[in-house]
Length: 284
Image (spheres, rainbow, N blue to C red):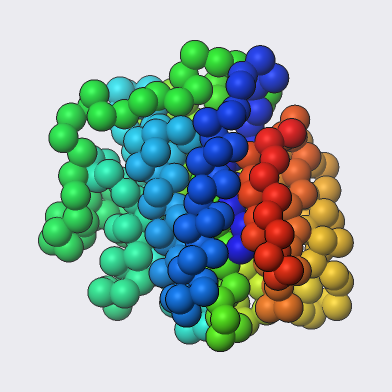
């Protein structure tokens, strides 16, 4: 499995808390994998923990948009069944990925947005945010390249389970001070999140450029139809993003357990559990 905590890095920041947290989450995932849990369940659980931590620009780490509202996006895709659940511009619920999971598991639909997403979450009995003081506003005081000086971020997880099933989950609060109603790539199937029988992908970065290149599904199609290796496919897709003026990164895993975690930004918070049992945790 692999996870990411976003492709924006502040060179002056100490990321020891995030590094330790990502390492702990890898061990949580290892235990769940050893117990035979399905890939989609693990991916959703890991992203949920990242949302709740308040350490990343997702879930509790969100900052408000230009109207002072908190609008969050998430998606979960099960590669074995091609089922996917997604929400965009979701307000007032703690865990967007849990809402996306409910869409996938308990709805005939794929994607809810805005007030409809909130109404679905409410009907599903999911936990609301008590008040705006719950949010930690990660990154709201720092600058970032691209989109002026506004920071952005995403979290994601890709998993291969013991049965050969693949899954991807992605969650984001988007760009600090973003225009109300703006939706990036994270909840868009094929752009920021994808899983099929061959690989699973979760992206992070300038979402507009990942949408324009269909980045996540393009990795999968390069792998399956063009015969490229996983890392070569991922790097080629990021090159297209860069050529358009974007930056960011992605994590991907294929059905053979190979992992790719390339990025075209100053860094990317990332961790992986490899098929030999070894663990890697990095920021830059």
